[in-house]
Image 1 (cartoon, rainbow, N blue to C red):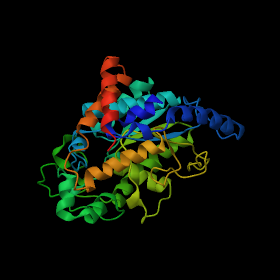
Image 2 (cartoon, helix red, strand yellow):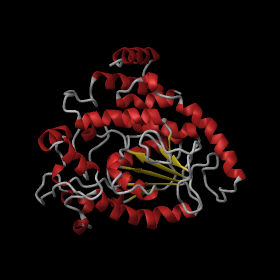
Image 3 (cartoon, helix red, strand yellow):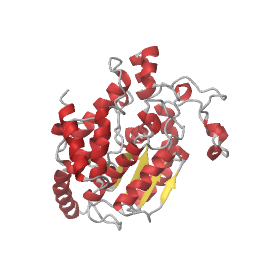
Image 4 (cartoon, rainbow, N blue to C red):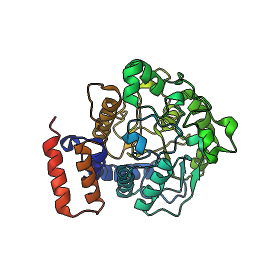
Length: 356
């Protein structure tokens, strides 16, 4: 139960509403493993022999521009200290689930690469291959890159910003070639300057991500490998839109939390099998995968993230306020860093301060 509670350290959430997801998961894993074996669904060789899950999507931990509420895109912002803790707790969730991987796929951006490395350290799998591709980079936010999201809402309006951030085929204003954060300035893209987009909609992002999915991920899954994809919110949204057959008009309502593993069991056609309860996840209403942190926890994270961008009545930064610092100390305790009395003070302070 500690893992599902603790991951919310970066999310300023109420401990009272977080379910005991880890213990529930353990029971469900055993049940699904038995059902899967009886049904003859696992006829392959993989390091992952203790769970029925075959695929995991994971968004990276908090980066400096996540913390500062800025549009990031292809800008190579590093993880913050809290982002490192988020990634490690995500790894602990996976370790507790018993899930092992045969290979990892991630972007060329260090916030995603480091998240993948930290997760592998937590589950003791630093030895498996990690494949990196620009096709898994975050979408390019064009001229918005570097701007504060809430300030953009004040300037352009909530509806316009939401269309730019979440719609299927409406890209933000294009980035000029002399933009301060143009990816052409980065040497990692020197051999593909002609492929760098000036701006991307989700549709544009999907056009590159589906190439990687079809040519690299699908063959690995067909060979019976268990795959971890560590990425960015919009690139993962583009993959999930195809994978879950989410309509173009509905995708605007799908958001993803940082550093909460989303795990799937697949049928013989590599499509997601239903959840044990036969329902879609309660956090987004679109997914047949299972959040290892629990649906309620993810719902609260997404609510916080929505307020951080769109609620202009909130002046404080929800990524850096006092409660977030208390949660950070609690996460450190779970991972074994501070003395227990420090964590107890942090947790008591959090409980007293979150009633609002």
